[in-house]
Length: 137
Image 1 (tube, rainbow, N blue to C red):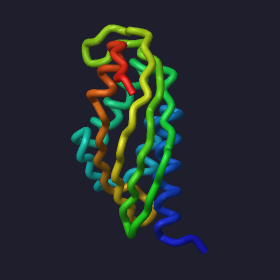
Image 2 (image 1 turned 180 degrees about the vertical axis):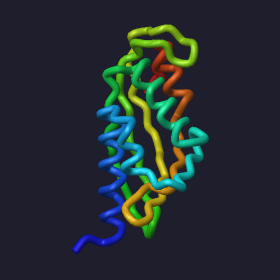
Image 3 (image 1 turned 30 degrees about the horizontal axis):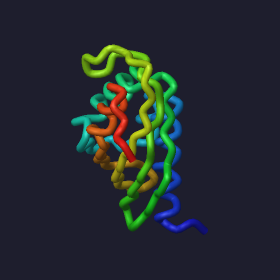
Image 4 (image 1 turned 90 degrees about the horizontal axis):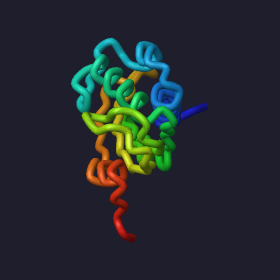
């Protein structure tokens, strides 16, 4: 029998794959609760709008979960997004440059549905990569 944490992590992983990697925007209605709270993109519709902007700017984007931790109703995810800047992104014309950026996500899950999300991304690194300014290691 799966633990609550295992089930919650599976729900979040399935959402990331369907929504972010396969761009199935309508899956949000399947994975997100009716009272879903979006703390990064203001609303469920805001989340869909932002995801569509990412898809337009980085059509080959791929999100990879690197670490996922479940504790009670919380699921924490560290992942990367990789892609090629091929479309307009917040007023910046396509550069053809590659991005490889770390993101952090926190989800709350109840009764098999995601009820809350907040996220953080290293925007400085992302913009540097879009502009072709790679930090020296």
